[in-house]
Amino acid sequence: MNYTNMNVAGVRIQTGCTDKLLFSPSGQEGDWRTWYIVFYHPFTEVPAVFLTPSGPAPNVAVVGIAQNVTLEGFDLCARNSDCSSGDAGFCWLAIGPA
Image (cartoon, rainbow, N blue to C red; front, side, top):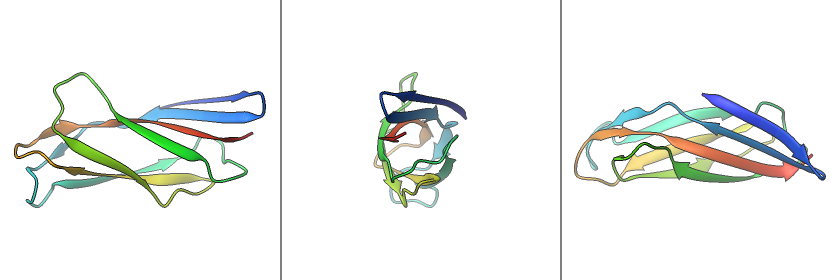
């Protein structure tokens, strides 16, 4: 994983991308995956977290969810909604007070 950390006008912004993982078809064992994201620098308040699938396409139709968001990180959980298997990964953006 790679990370970016910056402070702009009292706002801390951190970004990163996960490695791609293999997902089984929806409804089969292996259709859920979790990455444990640790922020480069902890936030002073729980940040807002945004997710997007990482390229290059084609990715399977995986839906990502930021769960258990804390000052130190979050769980990036994802489930394949596609009827075929394949690789998928995510990029994320966290925004909070500096």
